[in-house]
Length: 413
Image (cartoon, rainbow, N blue to C red; front, side, top):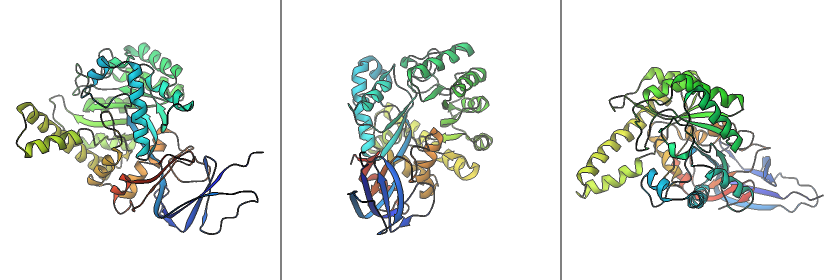
């Protein structure tokens, strides 16, 4: 019988992702790909015949691997707009870029990743390639093509569906293709012909999607920018809301406390994606300081200021006042590997560092239904682990620099 490999990890402290206080002077013992036990330092007793691998990080802090609940792996790179990728790139090129983006995210500590919308079977093929050893990626949890109405946001991913019967059929097709969850475009978005101020699907259509997904054992998450789309999604019983933009029909941003309270009461997870637009705003602010902004760029900057400021305000109010369960999602499209920015913005919105860590590990895993696999440092779970050299409970920016990234007991960094 083959003896499983034993790894002993020694760090300054273990932050297990559950919100418990850090534990010091312990050794985390791995058996193959799994966490075997956590024991006091120096008190590890191994059976005869075991020659463990020992990883020492005397100044390091050991945490669960990070979880990103919202990405779009096939995008990014040279292009500025969705449509440029869709019209300019084949599925094969998109697959190659998705592989690169996934590895970039993994190297910054994201060991589990949910993709919330790609064209055709691009991400399904990526996962199959990773399982065969052709690519190195985080654990991938995929919706494949998002369900959208005819001409709706991401319609070019090719899962348009209308009416109660049509959306039920779409869910069944996606599950047949390998979808882990169902992504619903409940409002317009950045797709050129859509309107983010208005909802897309009716409550009956949304309810049919949720019902069909749940019947097949799949969770749902809904893209909600328009205020009415949030209310519709809550009526339909979705499991997670993305963005929660609170965009009114006139295009203004207006928070509705009753909706925040309802999100919390129904136990719906919120993926606020607070970093979307932030880097673009930064770049334009530099140009503004240099007095090189064009007229069109000035208008874009004003729009991004309103968006970014409202995102932080609404997150702060939903977290601090409503008690909504928040999880970390980057909505990474153009930039991968910038995961920590969203955590820093969560801190700016008023979340404590320990709660930010939970939002990016155990609570994120809970929202995706993968707590048996990952999300915390407990015996029996996969050894998806990271080590950083500074204490992230004191400064969340410590999560920008990885001393180690481990996926299923194998070191990636």
